[in-house]
Image (cartoon, rainbow, N blue to C red; front, side):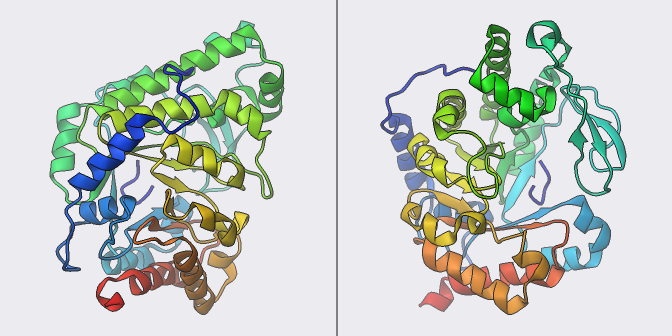
Length: 380
């Protein structure tokens, strides 16, 4: 994971929140050292207090940088880092072996990822698309996928030294993404058909992928990182990409396992998902997800207010319309709207993605306003 940023159900549970979630939240509350002075808390403590709704000194900061921005605004990014130091720190695995890849993911041309999927990229600074999926037929082609077991070869001692050397909140450099990786391997249209009419070979591969992702998270759970994450982009502009019932059948059990692995080792679990994901917010809260990075303005900030105090909103500020096109005053008002609707003595992280089209002065304003509205001294 960047310094700036950015299996089948193995333990069936009832629909009530698993007891491990309550135990993890209780342990987190006891672990957080409450600070009465705004300058005494470390970055790690500020994030922990935010997740536990324990009135942090300010909202934690988390800048996500895309190569597009780094290539265009190097000086502005350096100034941002100096004025608003980040609180969340991605830790790499210091792997002994890396899976084979070819090309570069954000350069023009072809890039083959760790699973063997080849992307075609026509714009520098962003990720391309798979045009020729590896798996045409699950029975005949599943073995063509390379499950990147090299990711399991992390150097745990090096990871732990990395964690010990910082007072920032650390996040594992691993990110399961079953729905997205299946699309890369199979193609989106074909995968949708698989979900509606699954073949035995598809189910076998999904179970194999899930077992690998669980093993990956368990390897990281044995390190000293504070948290782990997973991701899948689930939303279109207006709704979930598949029926919620289908999502609950296939993917909710996978996510339950991921979260339980994290909580079982005393770590928080974060998730990223683009698009309109309002329909699955209650499910993610039920599973005990600690922080959810979603497109708040795509769904309507006011529609998320019922979930305030039940989950931490890991950003964001609208990168489709506001960050590229708004004035700094409009950015200020947008942050204040999120704070007013979703902040409950914590429960919001000042996350912002600096990607294609975003204006540096607007990115800066996001962090400036979050500091202003959540600084504990200013609230006295």
